[in-house]
Length: 163
Image 1: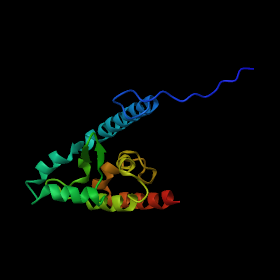
Image 2: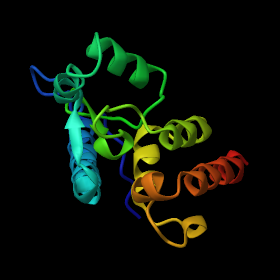
Image 3: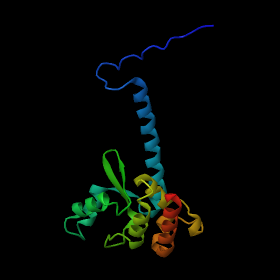
Image 4: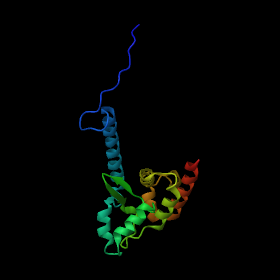
């Protein structure tokens, strides 16, 4: 029988503040997040895509005073769908009426229902997945066609996911 004594792991390499396995975990997490962002972007491409907040600010400037403050308020209060990716905030365009760029009421009501049970990424993904209560249609499409059904689906999902 061989007994192996546990040894202390090597110290972090000079100039690094974490252990090698922590760096590997971080690299894996970064890959997962990159794939998640790519999948979300691909799902939204037919619905206006994802835009960074600074680009949306430029678009809003034609319709609103202080667009950056408006976007910041929406994001901080979680009144719109947004995700953080590589130090930027990204917003899906399906949630804005054209040409005014007002937030669609069905989106803000669905977000209000779901923000207590989903994080920002889960919330964004909810809008791009086919939903059983919408006859397998996508909420990002249905907010324009059947806003009442989207609000009801969100309300029911909040109830189901709360427990």
